[in-house]
Length: 241
Image 1 (cartoon, one colour):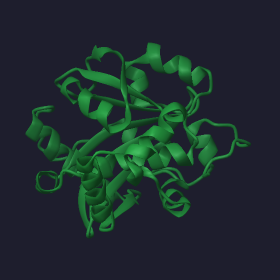
Image 2 (tube, one colour):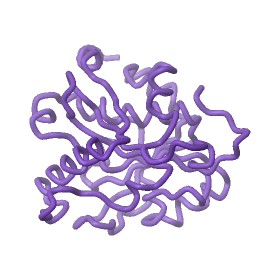
Image 3 (cartoon, helix red, strand yellow):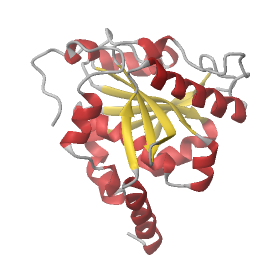
Image 4 (cartoon, helix red, strand yellow):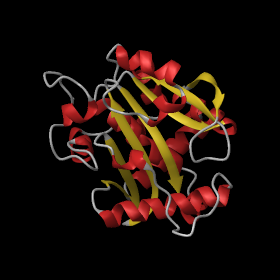
């Protein structure tokens, strides 16, 4: 690892000491994330500003949705929405836009973590270049907890290089029009099993403890019942390693 990369990793670890990850279960926590989304997307010109000042959709209410808030010294700094699916019965936002790519994987019982709605407050993203890495760290926690095969992300075309640098993500197909957004989105895929060791070697702060993962993923933001049922995986499968 080059000296510059070592310094960056050290900075992320230092900032991580001030970070907590919180699953949004309450209406208040969800609205805080929806408000931050609206501000971020309107500022970027991805959506038209709405009178409510909130941005959400039906996928925020599914049983297999995890809305994760990233708090820095107690203040909400960024957020990410994760959907976990191991079958066609558990919906993924990315499957609606890229069905030819995603649905065959779900039919073959692959487990996919779909990361969407990645946003940050302007004051935090301007001050801390580490925020994107700390936010997407939740995806890797989910991948470990659910023993996932792939992490997917729909992103703006100009952000593909970031995902490639971040975790070796590669384009899976051509950009497509995306629901509720004014601009097309590209589909990026990360092979968890092939790339796990090399990703952790480069960015060791993506590692997490079993207690961290259990706190976030033992239930979803909308479902307190059988987690296996929520993600469409047979109950005898094991998660949480």
